[in-house]
Image (cartoon, rainbow, N blue to C red; front, top):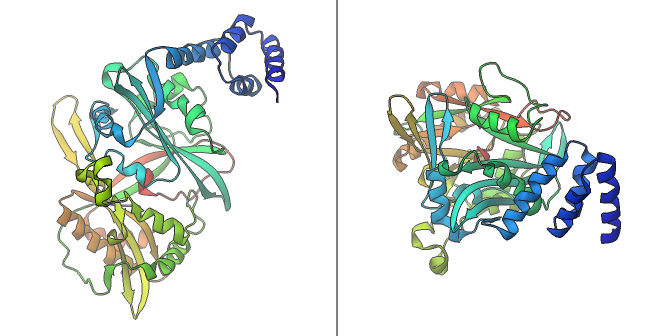
Amino acid sequence: MLLADRIEQLETAFREKGWPTDLLQRAIELRFPKDMLLRWAREGWANAEFISRRLDWHDRLTRGDLRGREATLQDNEAFQELWANSPEELGEWEVTTERGPNAFAQFLLQEHVTVLVLEQQGSLIATCAFASRIVNVAGTQLPVHYGQALRVHKDHRRRGYGDQVRSLGWAIGGAKPTIAQFDYMRSQNFAVVNWWQKYSPGFFDDVPKREGDVPGISVAVLQYPARGFDGDSSGIRTARRDDISRCVALINRTHRGDDLFRTYTEEFLLERLGAGYSGPHLDRWIGPERQQSVYGLNDFYVVEEGGRVVACAGLWDRGRDVRDRWRHIVTGDGKVVETTAVLDIGFVRGHGQALSRLLGFLIGETNRLGRDFLTVPLDRFPRVAAMLGHYEPVPEVRALRWGVADPKITRPHTDLVYW
C-alpha cells in the first residue's frame, strides 16, 4: 500500500471514529507508524485519548529524554542494578529478583527472546521481555509469545513506564506474528493485576478467576530441599553426544499431548545445551567472570539400564545467576532463596523409578552447588512425585494466563526457563 493510500484510509477512519483531525496531523508530523494507527482504528478498542497518549510517548522516545531499545550484553551491570531496585509485593512480602553475575543468563535459554529496556540519561528505568516459540495447544502447533520480566525501578513508578516498555514490543519485539500470549504471575501479586487492569482493560477477560488469588490457571512446581544423595546412582551419568537422539525421543514421548510443549529436535536440544557460549575469545566482550556456560552438555544427565537410556533430565544452576530476596514488609525479616531447576525431562513409560532416582541424584547435586532447593515440574507425573515424597518438597504455585478463549489450555506443560 502506498503512503498516500494509507493516509487516505486513516483520514476516513478518523472521520468515522470522530477522532480530531489534528491528532492525525500530529501523528504524520511525528512520523508515527501509520500501519499501527490503521490497526488500532480497525480493532475498535482504541480511542482518541489512547492515540494522543501514544503520540506523547512516541514524541518523548524519539525527541525527548527517553530511549526505548533492546538490551545488549554491555547493559549487564545496569540491568543488574535495575532488577535489584524493582521489588514485587506478594501479600506481606516484598520479593526482589537479583540477576548476576550474568544478568541475561535465563534469557539465553529461551527461544527468539527480545529484552526491551527504557533508558533515561544513561540509566535503565524499566524492562520487559518477550520470547516467541511454536508450541502445541489442543493438539495443534501454534506460534505464541511469552511475556515476562516486567519491572520498573522503584524510583520511577506510577508514571506509565511499565505500559510504555511493554508497548515497545509492538515496534521492536513484534516482528514474529503470533496468535496469543502466555505468562505467569506469582501468587498474591495483586499489584501487577491492578496494573494490567488499569493500563490494559480486558487483559484478564478470557482468564479463569481464582478466589483469593490472582487470576489464571493454577500451575504448581515442587521445590525439594537440597541434601546429600545416598541412594542408588548406578547407571546415572552425564549425557554424551550420541545420547541426544534417544533423549529427544524420550522427551517428546513424555510430554506428548501437553499444552505449551515445544516439540524437540536434535538441533533444538543441542542448541539449548550450548547456551552461554564460553571460551577465552569472549574475554574482551563479556569478561571472564561471565564466561561459564549457562546450561551445557555436562549439566544433562541420563539413566542407563541394561545398555539402554531409559530417563534423562538436565540441571540448570539457576541460583548462580538468578536469586530471590524476600523481605517481610512488617517485621523486616528476610531470606535469600537460590535454586536449581530441572529441564528437559524424558523417560520410558514404566520407568518412573529410574526418573525418581535421577531426580534424587540432582537434589544431591543441588546440595553440592550450595543451592537451597531443586525445582521440578512434576504435576504431570504424580507417581514420580510420590516416589520422592520423603524429601518433603514445598509446592510453589503460580497463575498461568493464556490470552485467548479458544483453543483452551487443559494440560499445561511447564518449562522452567520460562518460570
